[in-house]
Image (cartoon, rainbow, N blue to C red; front, side, top):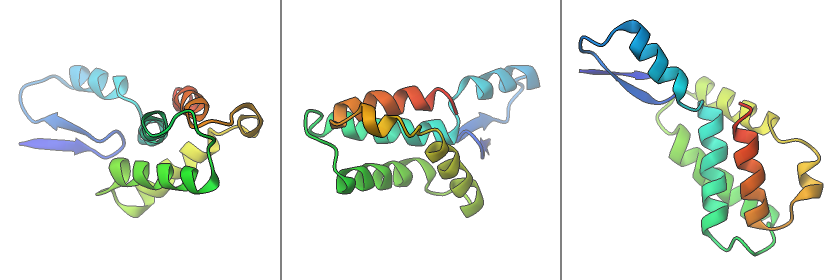
Length: 114
């Protein structure tokens, strides 16, 4: 039997693993907000990274990342992760990046902060 950690989407074994060992494993994983940003970065880096990022491209990357990362979580958990992820985007990012690949790098950096 496994128990899923609702914050970090990690299946925890219900065996004889100590609480400390489980805690260390959970804390080593990225948060859902970080996973969301990383999934969007993965999409942007994989699909035409040299092209300029458009509003439609950003929306598609975010929607795919949301579906990949947050599907199955209760609405309030998914919304909280989305708010935290979007809160990690600094206004200066909009001036620093133009291409999808540049955005992917910035999103990965932002993911380390959430």
